[in-house]
Structures are given as C-alpha cells and as structure tokens.
Image 1 (cartoon, rainbow, N blue to C red):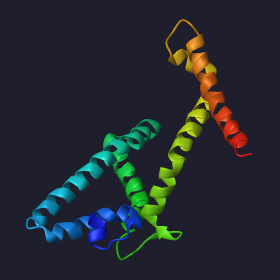
Image 2 (image 1 turned 180 degrees about the vertical axis):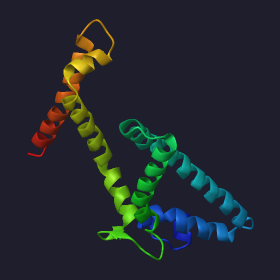
Image 3 (image 1 turned 45 degrees about the vertical axis):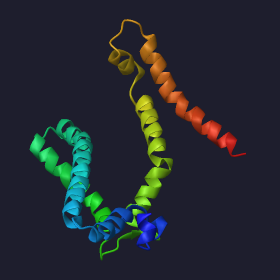
Image 4 (image 1 turned 90 degrees about the horizontal axis):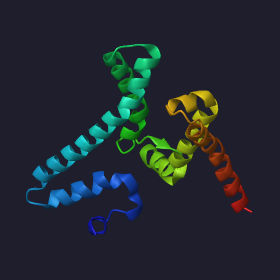
Length: 171
C-alpha cells in the first residue's frame, strides 16, 4: 500500500527500502526520528551480516598465508569493499548497472534464482572429489570406515545424479 500511495512502481526491487520508506517517513510527525532509527537498524543488520561473512575469508587468509588476524581482516575488508562498491553505487547518481538493471538488483536476481544452491552443490562435489577418500575416512574419527566412505560417495555422485535428472527433465 505504501508504494502505491506514493506512486512508486511495484517492481522497483531492492531500491524500495530507499524510496518508499523515506517518502512514508517524511509524512509522519516523528518521521525523521523514526527514519534515523530504522536506517540505523538496517545498517546494524548489514554490518553484523558482513562481520559473520567476513570471518570465512579472514580465517582462510590467516591459515593459508600465516598472517596476523589484523592483516587478514584488512585484506578481507579491502576485497569485500571492492566487490561491494558497485552494489553500493547502484542507486546513487553514479547509477552502476550490470546489463539493463542496477548492479545490486541484477546480483540479487542472479543469486536469488538458485545460483547459490547450485554453487553450494558444486562446491561440495568439488571438495568431495578433490580431498582423498582416506582423509575423509580419518576425519570421521571412527574405527569403522563405512561412514566416511558413504558420505564421500554420496557427496561425489549425488550432484552428478541431480544434474542427470535435471537434464532428463528438460526433454
């Protein structure tokens, strides 16, 4: 209802938070105060998500290159900022686009359309194929060899079976 009241197209996408809410809050008596609170909470939510996501590359940098936590954090922040900059500039006067859509909206569309799921399955399959079977079995810390072997065989062949089923479903 908010977007229609202010004449904002419903298919605006992720830009709605930055067009609909300011329009609505501008009409309220305490809108400026509520807006500061709302966007502060949005920033906090984004920051905490980034912090959690930053721990993965930061840990990888620390252990792979043997560098301190601070250096790893600075490297991870630099790379993430460089990657995130086009998204941040999507709805500014810079109007960064990827194809016909704003960059953030296009990335949101691509990742929301199943690519994250496919990437996860492919990554799991690659790890299952690249890590030797003996190492998998040892990782389970069990005297029986079958749990590790079963997990690896499933992780190796399930993605191939899923792709085969998908391809058969196309015809």
